[in-house]
Image (cartoon, rainbow, N blue to C red; front, side, top):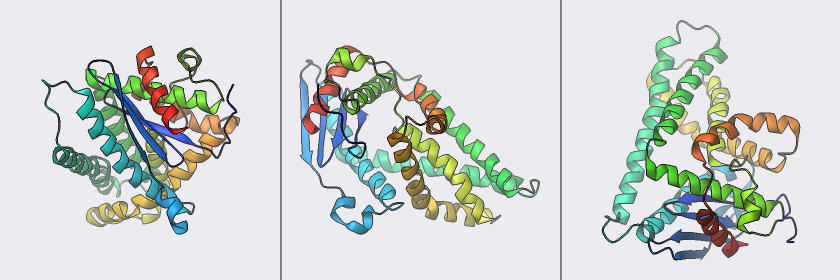
Length: 289
């Protein structure tokens, strides 16, 4: 049986179109199943900016840098998976189309998760005296929009398959973290919900933002939007440290309680994978460990 890795030795990944990307140390590997069932790989060595530049590796800074890097890496891996997984009859997206799609998606996210809640805040701020309560109500609006968006993805068959690969990724990471041989039978017993998941990270961002944005007072609509956008790296940095801490100390009871909402949210974004999907996750993991 393989040795159980050190808690500081972190592996993680991302679900792709008919595949999984895994990252560990300085290695990144994407494994994608082609329509003819063959698994195709894309591998690369990558030294994170947080390791190349000491300043960027400091606490509360590294989270924003890692988030930015993973967004870029994730988009590139998604483009690779679309190229491999889609059949010849299906229209494969070009790089500029994927980039444009990301820009549009980011703009929509800013509108719904920053602009709309800020508008709500400015409309009710004269009726709520307590600043914490006011920000909590704004946070509930933001969370409601997020839950509505996640729930709507369940209506899409393609997204349900992505969520199954997401579950395969989590199960495989769990098995590796517990020092298990990476076999389908060993991996199937583990949970699809992982405390260090990006879904949980987003929930932590929303919680941290309530506290951070409470420091802004009661600015007008335009200034609140600007301040919130400028403070996003601060919020992301704090949330990253929180999610990293809960991932390392998930055996503590109070940490489990803190992680519980994020794990429940993963009931939407993860699904039990099939054996062949676990096989893809194993293939990706073996390339980076």
